[in-house]
Length: 596
Picture (cartoon, rainbow, N blue to C red):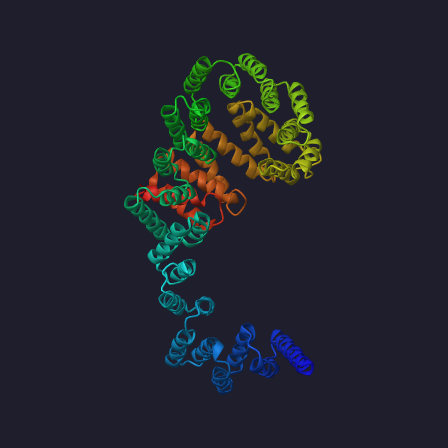
């Protein structure tokens, strides 16, 4: 017995040695030597990878007869693995240009696999790898039939139908799987990969609406449709679905609130406002009422602040709405954020610094137990001092927050403001020292802002020892922070004349264009954007300039055809741009596509 055991162990070791030698020669591209070792090894041991490599070498050397002889013998000697031999025999015949004979071997792959469902899965995977999705489909469907189960291999078949460009069947398999196992995450991931084409997306939406009508009490389809609409940044449609789920499953507005916040983050202020208004109306006595009421005003505030030119009368309305909220709920922890918003509006849009500081002090007193809130107010206070032209007072307050929130997000925010203050004052070395620390900040937003400003300083200083161009540019940015737009425009014009050939010229043109947009001087904005695009279209501002021009044509200059042309150019020329999704959406709307 012992001798037998030792002999079998030695044979196994010898076999492994043969395999290793074969693999080494195969890696080095020496197929004749690899074949001799693979042939010896495969006669005594079955190994899929080795068999695949063996076939690859036969095809490369065109030693068709050797291959066919080998497969015939192995099918007879090792019937358990016959399916694999038939499969690779088929590969060989295909390579020889004998498709009909290859087709016969592929049929034998299915027949010889018997009732072994897991084997059929592996064979289907190999058919897919060999770019034979039809065969992968056939063997998976046969596996279902032999197992008498329609619920197996749904994800695999979905992938195969994707290969075959049969989106309806693909979607059907995925939805069936998701419904059966209530696994939305897997389905979402696969749909994200599989529905990149607009026709497929439209089909998915239609199928989901049909399912919702057919199965109104099944939340799975609603969940998936909401997810899909959020992916498309279509918050209005998501709101309609979420509202229906909220009523049916009594979520008490919590999911709607999250959707409203998501719409806000994605700058869809109109739909965010509509969602929060709905919550205020639907749950006047609910826990979410105070915050939903404030967020409804805040969404309108963001809309007003981002509609150029910003109208004082609209800001006045917002202040009145915030005041009504404070009057209704009183000055307490529930209204301190509303007070803070009022202070910022008074300072930045009404130029009433005194009133802004008074309101902030009221808010700080009411929220004194909330350390983070107090420090946020202090940052606002620093901004107001800067607006008033008191940089020393500003840096004093920013530094207090830095100390108070040392390794926290607000501390980093305070550091960033101090860095910007150094920048405004032309103290570039000091600014850069702080920005280098902030590049490693935990918040991606702060790290990105720090990196952007640091690059701006690095790219445009050191070229002239006085750093005069950069100092002039940073002082214009301070004017803009202080809302002195007309003064800033005059300075920018002079700057461009003086530094047209400086590395800052693209920044100067871009800042000029953005300032004209804020002044609602759209023709001048367009002139500067065209200049930027013609001179620096290949550079970092190419897609920014093109998107800004397209938006101006669409929203302000009423040139629909030109807007469409520019959105299309952006999608083709800058496929990796962050503006591609929005450009596609706007292009479709302008083209007149039905977007329900």
